[in-house]
Length: 74
Image (cartoon, rainbow, N blue to C red; front, side, top):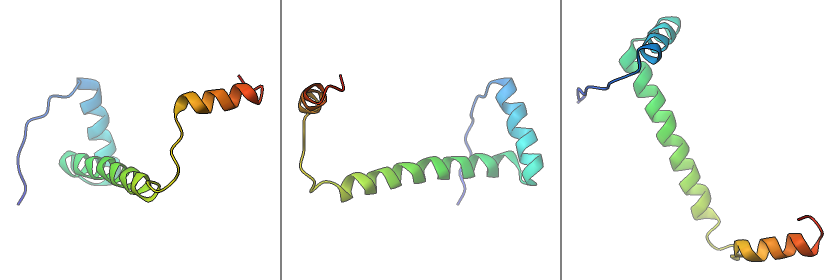
């Protein structure tokens, strides 16, 4: 079931959305839904990557800087 909401957009952004929706032969609501889905999918991919690397050894930023300094890179 779809929900209705009110979103306040900058007039130029709204115009751009309307033009993009026309080019894609969809309505603005569909375009916004697709954009939100892509945005959330990126977060899900990031979380999966973080989870897959949780068993890797951890190194502090300070240690990274020390190593870079030791190697003459900073």
